[in-house]
Amino acid sequence: MQSSRTNIRQISNNLYLISLDPLIHGFENFISVWLYKGKKTFIIDVGPSVTSAGVLAALHELMIDHLDYIFLTHIHLDHAGGIGEISSYYQKTPIICHRAGMDHLVDPRILTAETIKSLGETGRAYGTIQPVNKRQLVDAGQFVSDVVSPIMTPGHSQHHVSYQTEEYLFAGEAGGVCFPLPLNNGDYMRPATPPRFFLDITAKSIDDLIARNPTNICFSHFGIKDDAIGMLTAHKQQLLLWKELISGQMARSQEKDFLDRCLEVLLQSDPLMAGFSCLDESVQQRERIFIYNSIKGFQGYLKAVSNNS
Image 1 (tube, rainbow, N blue to C red):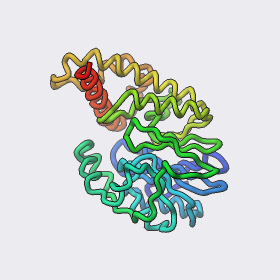
Image 2: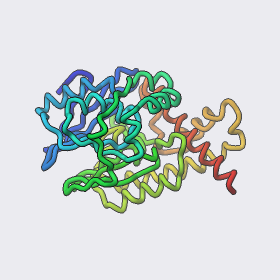
Image 3: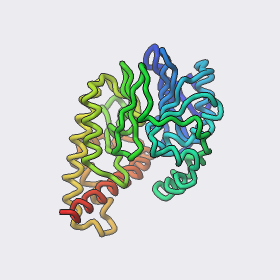
Image 4: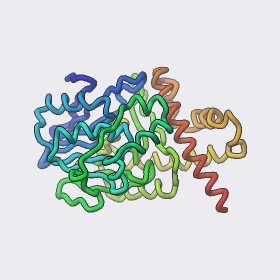
């Protein structure tokens, strides 16, 4: 099924993956909204503002005229940038997010500026986030439901929340980024560790998710896997490997080619990124942007550890 700027894939009787195309080269099948239709009907994340019309069209195509909840894993613009438009359409729907993100949704000017500072043209291409009616916002830490449970998972950001139903764990980016390689060549996985990054906090979030004994893990980037514990365990091991590999480059962290050298080492030594060369050139270009940002997160973390030792 096709809809403007979206592609709808039915995963099961009660779960749909709505993939968004922000019309940025290399971003096809990378950003998603999850729709759950069951005892309660809700979406996980809303995508950037430039795809809001497509999200609304997809929900209309699926005959969703009411949402019980809108859940935000975090407020980065590729996940929450369209919340102003979506919440204006579903004005009676509570928006559940981390308390630390609420003020930025009501007044998103700082959030927008920081996104552009971090991601440059990619951040601009996501579009401008519109303010949210404060009355719709609900603190995830106070939210109680018999259908879905919030799990505080800081790491990718301090305001990151994962959500679990009986069947699915919606992990946002707490389990990193994972998507299938072309021609059924396995999966590609990488950390999502932008500054400021704290390895111990991120690892604890992963442990907290594993302790929930999930079965199916739904990634924001991108898709679903039926071995949630295995995927989370592999990602935690990947984080520890990145710490080791980037630590080996820190003596030259002030040199101009530091990020490029780290990228080369990671691609040579991280088996979960072995399929990088199989990716389309436009996707490789996208991935370099985010890998560099994740390396910067490790760089800041390792520098802080060294200064405190």
